Length: 107
Image (cartoon, rainbow, N blue to C red; front, side):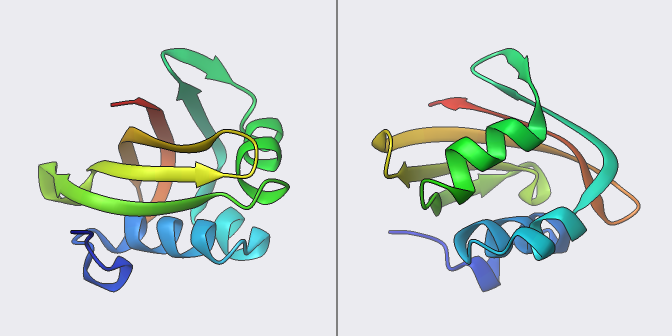
């Protein structure tokens, strides 16, 4: 059973997931700090390049299964047109109401 995006505890993470699922580049960028960073499976990636490839050009979508750590950690089924669906873990660092870093990888 998934957690509806509107019920995610942390408002910043909620905005991030909603923007990702809506494929809304402007809202996604607005949810991030200007110097935001990220990693995928333990390796730092170029955030703009990664999100273009894994989210926007491939129809990325998160179905959140559960959250912890006040909403800053998620387990989600993530799918896109490139890789299909996989169970993923997401961890967010939030600063001044924006995501300053996120880490994702297979769960």
